[in-house]
Length: 249
Image: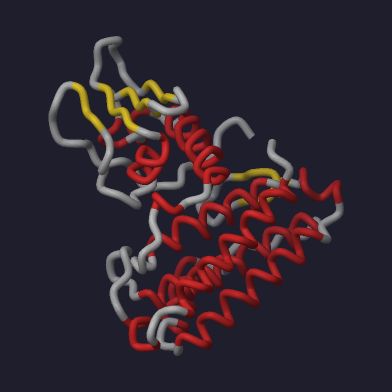
């Protein structure tokens, strides 16, 4: 496990990049479409803020030992995002910044013993509290790309790509074949790091390869697969919804 304090520093830097992107857009651009179907940039910004609040809840569970749901329900989560999506740029920037600071303060003051307390994601799987920090890292970097405002997988920090690619490949390989979607039966190879996930039923199955950054962009749904090669030739499959349930925690 990486030192969560270093990951928090990465998250702080990533949040400042999100804020910088938002602050550099004209106010009317908040209502422009994001890369996520049905969501504007304001929806994405609001989600980044509400996610910080939701993960704060899980840290509070770890701190107190009293169960606190990540979100009260999926309906409440969606309603809160919709309610916040009509705000101006300044309000969105302030919300992202304030909730990120609140999350960071909760994490940095969490008692050492609390990091191993088991909490539960809204998706239903359980994980130790220290994994909350990594979940937030995914949210900040992936949703920054979803703003569709000039930041994408090519801009992700190397530290994030190294962690997220390794985790994604391991988690995808741990899924049963029926949950691997169209990538079941393929071997995935990062040509620059040598990392791979073998999802094939046969040794001579098809292989998808490319730089780790390109592979992560595609597997996370943040790119269409530019920079990847498929052998034998054909159309790239559609990866399953990301991120996946963590394995080996």
